[in-house]
Image (cartoon, rainbow, N blue to C red; front, side, top):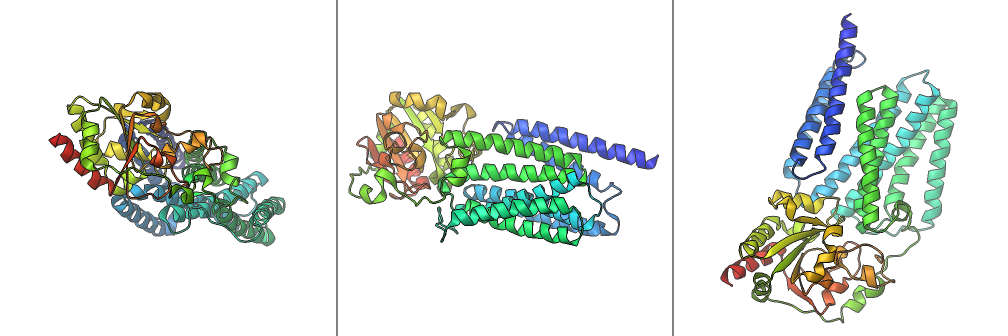
Length: 469
């Protein structure tokens, strides 16, 4: 009787946790409710952890090991969350994806090594979980290294990497199939460990050639991988919450990957495999040619006059805004302009920054009204009726070469049509290219004026000049 009550209580706790996770995912769809969504998800996971301790198949003399792991992981997560800068948030997401993937892979491997008489379906889940989770780990570590600047944006691998990668993937699939056929025994365990090692290597080779501009899509794909690996591990250990939670993560990762790829006019296969065999190219407006093209500079007082006496202003935030931590300053500038009767809106490109929603999170942190944020599809037609566009650290997402230059590597990628405005003011530290490594033709447009310097300091000067205008 006690066991029945305990099992029913655990199942009920898992059910409530799953409901909280589903509701939290819905709440995360809007900056207005995202904080509540995070709190609901955290509460659901805490409930699931507590309920798991009452599972009669877990614990015993090893309770202290589990508690120690929770303490160490919880403390580490708290410190990371407190210290991480918004500019480093994509790297943190990549690490979380990798940790989730390798956890699922290790669960699958340990279950196979420590349990006998497993069914063939369970072994299939173990093999797939091991492969997908391992790829998520090393792929995420490479993504982290690229985003952190520890590795070049696009890494050229020596030798015939296509053949090596194909061989790794083929060998990994073959060893996984052999593991399923053998199903049990020392030989099967050895083959599974080899599969695990090959999958780790495959994750490195799959992500390493991918350009830095594609990292937002890669992070979303790896997020889906970690979710699928959790689902498979949930089947292995017969844990319903892992299955439900992994399904939510995997499905959201897949949808996000598709949306991000669509925003870049790319297919998922092109993102993952398009870089193989392709050398980095600056396109038709490469850096070499860009040096001889004219660039107009503007002083803060001239730029402020244009902003102060405009009727319509659109702000285009980019990664440079995050680097300078200028979100509060730009909100102050926008409020000052709105007090003067200027219509100020923000144009958000889906892949601006280093991860999906990066700019939305930054601006929400500065209490920018959500109604002032406009997605690319909603605002692109308004640039032609805009007096001034203020581009803050955005590069690739404003490059007209994506529309006009068939030789450009980003040709076909939907971009914000800022060049159609009456005047464009770009805030940048210098003339460096964006994450795609492509020279921005917008900087040489006769309508464009460059205000060089740290974005936060430049906006501070604009605020002072607007007040004096």
